[in-house]
Image 1 (tube, one colour):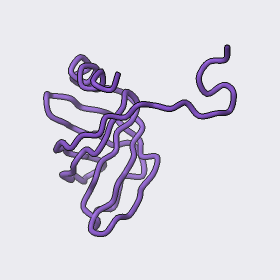
Image 2 (cartoon, helix red, strand yellow):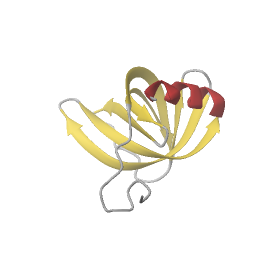
Image 3 (cartoon, helix red, strand yellow):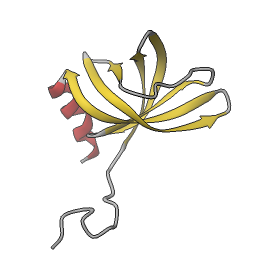
Length: 106
């Protein structure tokens, strides 16, 4: 049996649909947003539409003292906001809390 994704078929990753406040920081920008969904290795955030989204590394703070170092992978403009998908590079703070939050998807 091949490992997930090795056969050319993308692995399906369970995502937890959730609405929670967050703060996204990059360079000299700090923007309040709302987490829309998450998984162990990714997070989607709704940001105000006028926001110029980070093109490189950013930090996302969510409740319970969790801080994630992320890299944007896609941006979808939607009405008055944009939905940005981030790949998680590292869990800077709150690794146990993040693991508990993500375990809801399993």
